[in-house]
Image (cartoon, rainbow, N blue to C red; front, side, top):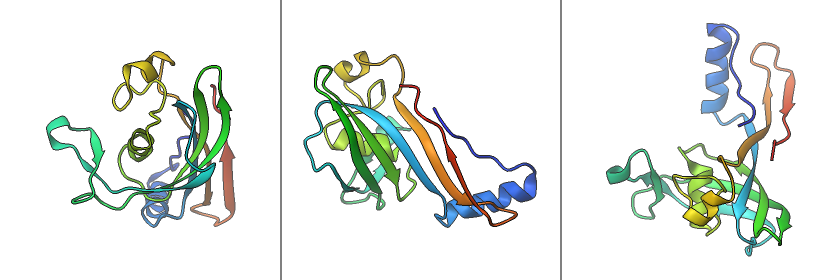
Length: 154
């Protein structure tokens, strides 16, 4: 859920695509993850990702053949009663399913993720609790800084 960006017209869409390809778009997400976050309160997850070919379109951490994948994270809150942590995630690279794979690899799958989660983590939410909450970029036509915020519904 969350923010979706599209160009109004072919030219704007092409320029937006270039911004994304050149990694000139900053995206932030919030997720509810299973368990009490035990790693540092903020940091980076640097784990290579590749396709899990027998289970496509699933992805996996693959130190031998994976492409570099970097996610910055920050713990926002821990709900001890529910054993749930709220995490802010910022993908630096843009691999398919990157945030979901990195959270699974950290031992904290995103709640409601029936692809990478466990039965217990899926039971804690009716849907995937991953939300695009902020995006920053330069407007493709004017060059003016543009920031859009959308608070998560969970």
